[in-house]
Amino acid sequence: MKSNVVETAVGALVIAIAAGFFLYVYNTTDLGRGSNGYRINAEFENIEGISVGSDIRMAGIKIGTVVQQKLDPTTFQAIVTMSVANFVKLPDDTTAKVTSEGLLGSKFITLEIGGSEEILKDGDSLTHTQSALDIWALINEFMFSDKDKKSK
Image 1 (cartoon, helix red, strand yellow):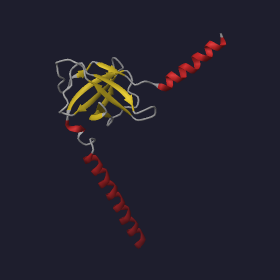
Image 2 (spheres, helix red, strand yellow; image 1 turned 45 degrees about the vertical axis):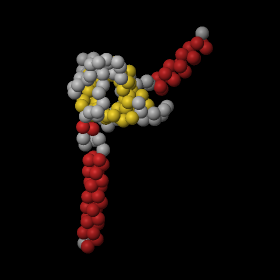
Image 3 (cartoon, one colour; image 1 turned 180 degrees about the vertical axis):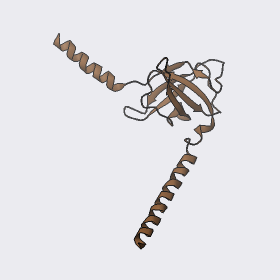
Image 4 (spheres, one colour; image 1 turned 120 degrees about the horizontal axis):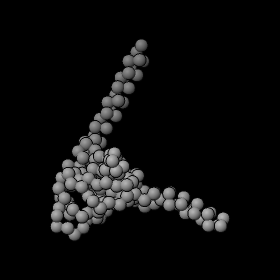
């Protein structure tokens, strides 16, 4: 009977420490805040590898976070909502691209500014996007197209 009480107390202590750790991580990262910036939307054909919490970068520096993603039921495009830091003023012709850190690295969205004088506001949408490149589909296509050429 005494060992059950000790085991229960140790279990409760472990759960309390784990909960404290998760609370700390939630409060010290952008997960809990959504990075406190303004939100912009972008539509992509393919956002493979991008999820809520993925980085938004400009010139290699993190300036925001993906806060929501959903599928448009009419166009079947992926709609990504990004929270961008308030100090970054983006022109309305900014381009958003899904890219990765090297061949097998994690994916993120990089923003490249345009030359427009019009600045995006909270809730605006980017019109110029470039989707993720599916490298395995390209390799597969290359492999099978090569076999078709040899058989002819």
